[in-house]
Length: 115
Image (cartoon, rainbow, N blue to C red):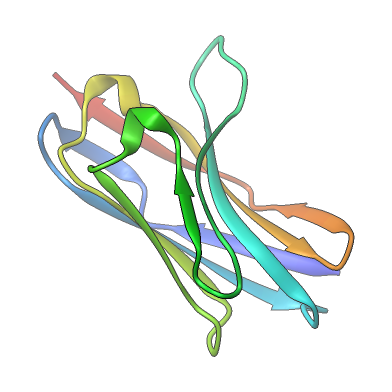
């Protein structure tokens, strides 16, 4: 099994910054893409950013220029640096990992941005 543990969520004022981290552990041989998703109340879960094992990144249009995804393959971690946060970024953020042909999710961490 694979475990993903997120940390770093919290409450921040609009315009502020937060950094989310996620560590993968367990049977992670073959760890491939990692990503962050988010789900706001009453909305579907949406992709925020992805990063391949080689470091190629992709971002949702709504966060381009404000968020940066990175990973440390030696430590099996993925991070999301979030700057210039807006109230509409408020959501539960989930870490995602692809290991061989299986998908794994973290438990989620709440990010709340006040106006």
